[in-house]
Each structure stands twice: as C-alpha cells, then as structure tokens.
Length: 90
Image (cartoon, rainbow, N blue to C red; front, top):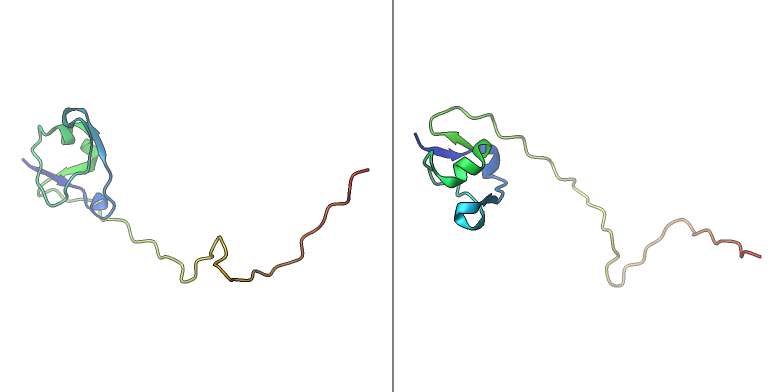
C-alpha cells in the first residue's frame, strides 16, 4: 500500500537524510511513496499509509500584530531611560 507525507509535515516540510539518495531529500507531499522506498524506511514517522486517518495538523500560531524591531532603521531615533554611567575605579 502506498504511503503519503503526514499532514503536519505538508505545511512545514523538512529534509530527510537518505543514504541511498546520497544526502538530504525533501519529500514531495503530492507524491505517493512505496513501502520499500528508502525515504519511508529512513523516516517512517514522516509518512502514513494512504487511506489511513492522520492526526489533525496543529493549529497555526498567530503572529503578533506588532513585532519589535531589534535594530534601529536609518534615521530612526531611539529613546529610553538614560544609561547609568559607571563610577571610575580608583
């Protein structure tokens, strides 16, 4: 029976190391894979048999409306509390 990529890996695919293919390969979620395919043998948890019920994909994480910028843009003035100066060591 053919295998397919699990739903939770369709949105966020990952490369799988398959020695027979000579390196890392990213499975195509549109393809069906045979049970003796080296990719299925290398990472069986990544695949599910065709027709079998899969766990629902995880809900998307909501991205914040405002994301703090880590560095200032050209010409941007940053304000904040005044910096403490260290007392000189004697």
